[in-house]
Length: 206
Image 1 (cartoon, one colour):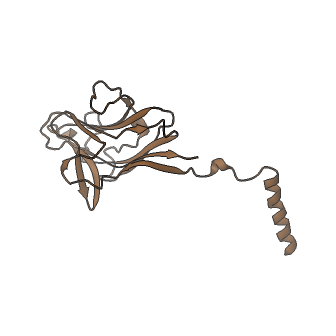
Image 2 (cartoon, one colour):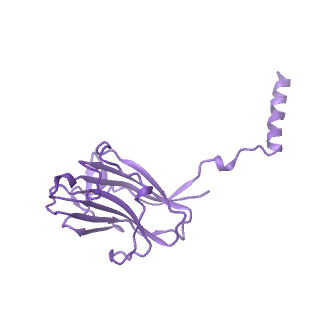
Image 3 (cartoon, helix red, strand yellow):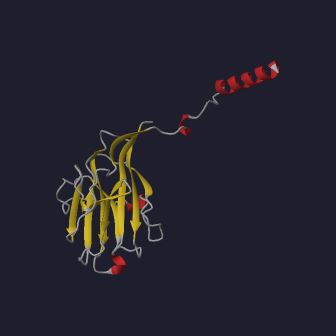
C-alpha cells in the first residue's frame, strides 16, 4: 500500500514538473458588480422615476411604469389601452464608465406578456450610445445591440424573465444602455408588454 501511495505522489509531482499544472484559463472569471438596479424601490403603477434613469416617451403619452408583483419590483411598458396608435418609449440606464472599468459588460432580465406577434410594431430593442447627454435623444447616436440580448418572443411563457449578458469589453468611453419599446394602444395585435429587471453593470477581474 505504501508503495502505491508513493508512486501516485511521484506521478502527480511529475505532472507539475513537466508543465501539466492546472490551466488558469479554465478557471471561472471573477466578476465585480459596479452598478445594480433591481427596481425594488418601485411604486406600483407609477411612471418610472428612479435616480439616474431616463424615462422618455418619444411617441404617445405613456412612459415606462414601475411595477410590483409578489414583492418583486420591475420596469414595464404595456401599450394595452394606451389610446395611442403608436407608443415609442425609452428607458435609459445611468452613465456607464467603460474607460474606468475595462473588460466590462451588462446583464439584465426581460419578460413579455400578451405579445401576439413577433413584429417591429410590438418590440423591445436594446441600444447603446456614447454621446447621449441625458436629454437629447434625437442628436445622440444609438447602435442597435439587440442581437446580443435574449429578448423573449411570443412563444415564451408570460412573465418568465430571460437573462441576457452583453460583453462591452470592445468599447470605450461613457456609455448608456437603452431599452426602446414600440407598440400600439389601438391595434390589438400590437398591444403586448415587455418587462425589465435586475440590470447589472459588471467587470471581469481576470
